[in-house]
Picture: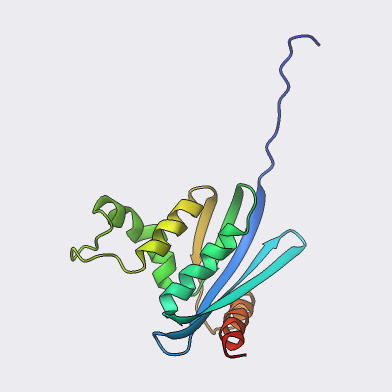
Length: 156
């Protein structure tokens, strides 16, 4: 039919991310791990840093997972870090409004990672979910194993 407009349906992938960080000493050697699930597909990623903090590793796990996505997705992130979950969903708008200062007018810690996480999350539709750590949640337990592998491989 000449002149007819075709309707194009955009298919957005639904991705589940389980992310965790670990640190041996705080600060000290740390690791991060994440599992990305899409349908029947899974991808495990992990890494480590020699001198870091637990909060930096928790943030890094989510950042690396989001960086590995190649297109816009609907995402559900599961983390045992209230720092990550509350930071991105509750505190971040106020930090940005105050020029990356806390309510006490102090600089936001890990601002480099918060800015990167904010940038990456804006490219997706993200639900942020807190799960209790070390409580038998299968995705969180697996992410914890990956994060600890990241620490262990630093010593190898």
